[in-house]
Image (cartoon, rainbow, N blue to C red; front, side):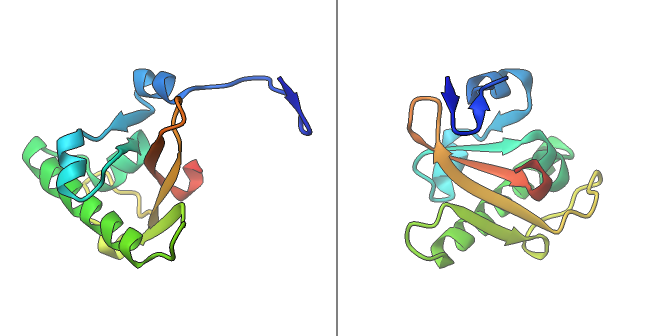
Length: 124
């Protein structure tokens, strides 16, 4: 599996990232309630930064995060695949390190289906 950059030395599927806990799948009902039709994932780092806390608080913060992402998607030009949500539009958590934004990137999943992944800028 060589390309113009040379041989592939390692690969990691989304399924493996979900299994390892590096990625967390947002329940389809929660994503759907926010207006998303496909799979939505969040990195462990972004979850810790903007969602983590007590269970009841997490539900509310996750809803706020998804609403902010939905607004960013609605305001973006057609065919955009990367959306930036400023931290001011997001909830903070006790574990917050002061990240300044959340990225939402839509890419093909392991089977070619569209998957949105929410991540911190340094995780891109």
